[in-house]
Length: 169
Image 1: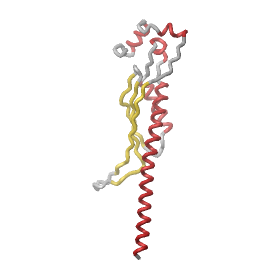
Image 2 (image 1 turned 30 degrees about the vertical axis):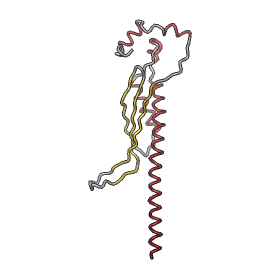
Image 3 (image 1 turned 45 degrees about the vertical axis):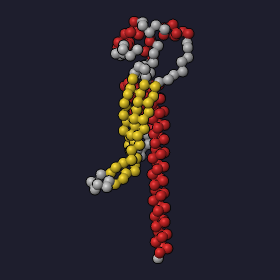
Image 4 (image 1 turned 60 degrees about the vertical axis):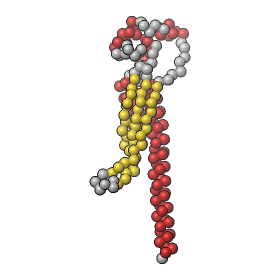
């Protein structure tokens, strides 16, 4: 009888250890996948949000906030894991110079029963943050260099005034 209970105890401990390893693996893998999804989505959305008219007129890179958020949400929603729920927060979006800070909280499917007896469930939350600054490989083009040298031109000043960016340049 003693050996039977010992074997049952060992089997239960093994099952608990396997479940614990599975939970740790899901959280670690989920965190890594969320980071790379957030990184690739943010970088691609920054490229989508570049204002080409401002670039050719003033010679500076500027992103459109609304276009960035729209592109980010579309790309992120098309690539997420459907077994999780996500909460996305945009904490800093600068148009000029282009910089964004994004935070994504993902709720795992794992839930723990609360010990307070209130009947509520606590979820394991994975928080991922990513800060991005637009970096481009600048290739000099002789034909456009002449137009880009004068950042104080009337066209550039009118665009800066339109976008309320006079103090930032």
